[in-house]
Amino acid sequence: MAARNKFLFFVVVLAMMLVPACAFADDEEAPKPPEIKVTTVGVIGNPNIASEYILNVVDTKPGKILSREMIQTDIEAIYNQGFFSYVDVDLRPDRDGVAVVFSVQENPIIESINFTGNTLYSTETLMKEVFSQEGTVFNRVFFRNDLDRIQEHYHKDGYVMVRVSDVQIQGGNIYVTILEPRVGDVIIQGNKKTKTYVIRRELKLEKGDIFNVTHFRHHLGKLQGLGYFEDVNVAFDVPEDDDSSVDLILTVKEKRTASIGLNLAYGTESGMSGGLTYNDSNMFGRGINFEVGFNEGDEATYWLTFASNYMDAHTYAWRVGASYRNYDDRYYYRRGQRQFEFDEKSMTVFAGLGKKFSNEDWSWFLTLRHEDTEYSDIHNAIPGYIDELTPWDGVNQTIELSLTWDKRDEYSPYSKGFVWDTNIEQAVKAIGGEYDYMKYWTQARYYASLNNIVNGFADSDLRWTDDNPLLFAARLRIGSATKDELPAFARYSLGGMNTLRGYNSRSFEGSNMYMGNFELRVPVSTAVSLVGFYDIGNADEKFDWDNYHDDYGVGVRVKTPFGNLRVDYAKGEDENRTYFGFGEMF
Image 1 (tube, rainbow, N blue to C red):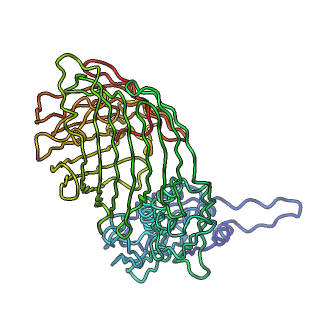
Image 2: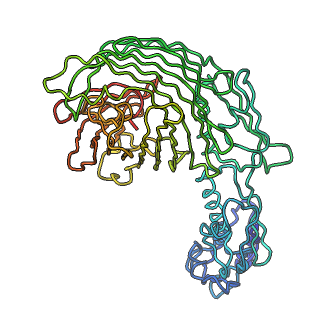
């Protein structure tokens, strides 16, 4: 409400009445009105708000000279306290001066605060942001701050379009209307090859959803990360005469998704190798990944895969493929000690299908795999070598079921939270295999920001931001089998750049396995991170918790246009090893 006050023209009149009448010559200056001193200052009309509180903002004080401008400023100051719907002033002659009495009318006592239109948060939740309470005098300044906090609560959670659209005060009852704009039409344009449903399923926006900018940015980032588009632009349009919804217009500019890759590599065991790869990540515009390629060298590999990796509660992911590997002069290790060299040939064909449950934190994937492996030509053997390898070649037919519980924060720009996998692999003779066994293993991964813990103890100039934090990452894995002795190609295997980094590939093998990997990932800049790590574990015919192998080391991660470049230097029990690759180990 606007303040109502009188223009104090009668102050001048009163002053003139106190001046003796006299005549002035035309050439004489008119004397200034005499100064009037304030004798007392008071307030009336305030049964609930203390007079001292009101007069605390008043500059007019006893003993001061009465000023029209000061009185006007005082009226505005009292009104701006927020407790009053009306403020006025009375001037009363008092002895040798004037008594100033401010007259106020208090706002009503709050009887109730009512919210309508709030579907995201309950009234109880919104009232936690409200300082105004029932039984107190309504203060429009305090309540405006209350409404700001309510909007900030929505905006902090990503609902940036939500606002307070109306406030009605009826006596002591306050009615607040919350406007939660919902998604209207989702218009996708510019896509000539990519099917519209492939784009739409990444956005996860349906007509009638409440728009959340945090979620939308995340889904937009995933859409851009598919590699199908050169550019993605977003526009919003509010339909005429309907501010309760917003139309979303997505314009994409497609790019070529097929590519030919040339690769060269060198391994301390495998020697020089190189090959070609043809890949199309958006075959037929349906988000299908097709890849065919080969590598030649001591380890020659040929492969062909088709995969559709997207899955939700309504969409199946699937993979089919085949590979052939011919590995000459491969080293065989037994409990970390090199025994001999051998040649290996392996042909694998697989097909898999998976889907998320109605609770999309959970998913399953079933894979059928045919593997035909041949070991031959033992050479360069050490004296007294042990051959636990060559008796185990042959055809293996397996069915593998994977269950995943993924509780990572899907809207976080980095891995945050945990994910748990459980796998069961059954080898079946009945469908043409030569072996019959069951393997089962489980794995948990955990990622946590340490920013809050180290805040104040370490230098934050290293760009440890909310989006790029100091991160602790851990992976624990344990597995076993129904038989003490598994075929060589089916054994658990540890050693190499993805398990125990301080040891050669497949240094430790067996029917039982346990492993832990721990990393501290320290951002140095937005593009570079340092990593300190520790690995521990063992694979053997039986669990031997005392006979473990471990390593430690440091690594560097560099973000490049081709992915996250990874360099690790690890110190094992007998030697140090360096690895180059792309992506995190887990």
